[in-house]
Length: 410
Image (cartoon, rainbow, N blue to C red; front, side, top):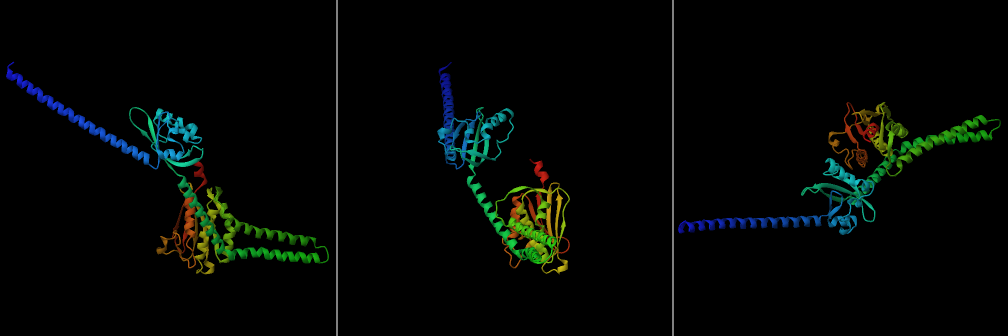
């Protein structure tokens, strides 16, 4: 090979080395840049996790805690070192404490998700064994063939306290409204109680005259005393019904027959309607009408509908004042209860505001009755509404789920 060829060959080799070297350097610089970016992202992620207000915990496939952020340590009242390496079930009350390992094993064996990827409410346990509610979201962390899971928890204690305070406020407002309804019915109640009291006084005076008189008046005296006893029970029954509705006790829901619920307040409805010259007609469905409700609250809604219907007929001639209370089963497992009057109806301008607080079409109304009724029915998982029936008047209704459906979902 000539000397010139050798020189050319070395030049080519040098150029190739330079290109390769430059390529290697470029790869190195690019790789270093990628590493720097990954480190920056890792630092940023670490900062986000460490400063998060929610608790973030990662565990391995055996349920052992791998990492915890400061919020988790604060939430559960542990030091981080006292949590890492221990089974995450240490943070759970029973029965979750005992069953948790089976949840993980079942997922790894079957791949069926029961909790992973689905948010849910859970009960948690602090280091002092006190429990608190939390929202939990779990996700699987992919990579390296190792099964790991991350859980994010948010303490619901303040939220639950807020809901409890809100419920107590609603119950207090409902109680005030109930007392207002009874106050409006005072004239009819006074009349109803006055009748047995007058009868008691009359029979007591008759018994006294019989005792003062001559001869054997034993049978007549017994009859008078029996009537005194019956009239006293009649007056007592009215008072008991008033007290039951006026009580401000906490709500207690149970299965009860809605028709029996209506039956229990019939005397109150009757005496108020009679005092205002209104005929009450009952059109009740023959089907099973068991519902899971707070009895007094639903009776409050019924009485509010009745009172509104009676008030709406003040301008109607006495002989034409009618109120229809009806029930019907709809959509298989729902019961619709309605109160229909034949009064002046509801104007189109008033329809949108009917169930809003402080909205009223009455001169002296507070505008809280229908709003509270809506809150009560909504809290029972039902719906409430209004409709224009054919002819005069208005029909207010609410729909509740019947006993059958409740049992079917258990």
